[in-house]
Image (cartoon, rainbow, N blue to C red; front, side, top):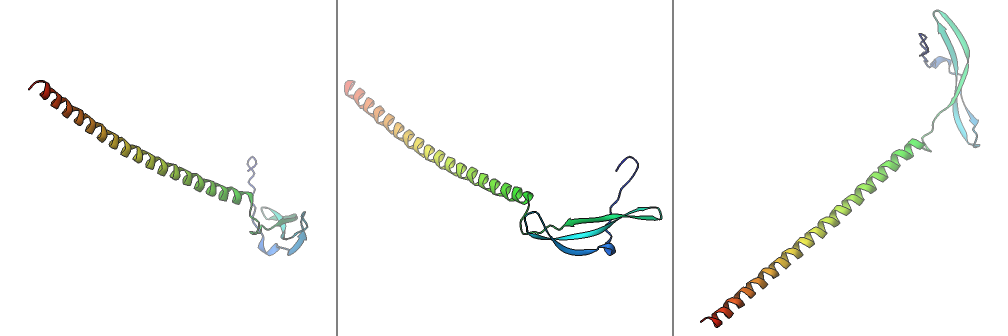
Length: 127
């Protein structure tokens, strides 16, 4: 929109001139569409010229496609790495808890043995 002037572009299907192929910069052939451009002001119709544009072919894929695929692959890889880290952490913490419980049991057993020896020694000294 420019000031109070509204510009609306509508494709004119019956004014499409031709489908043809032209050589693009890389030497490959791409289909192009040539359309008539008209300006309509009230009842007046002005033909400005012709507009030529190339159609997009889905064989190559654009930069946006690469960004989407790259983001998906990167996100999946990051998620996989995070899951692997969580699994390793869980295994290590479980192993550490088991080892702590085993050491605690050995310490309790040692304390019990020392307590029993002290009781027997005290009985031997004080009959």
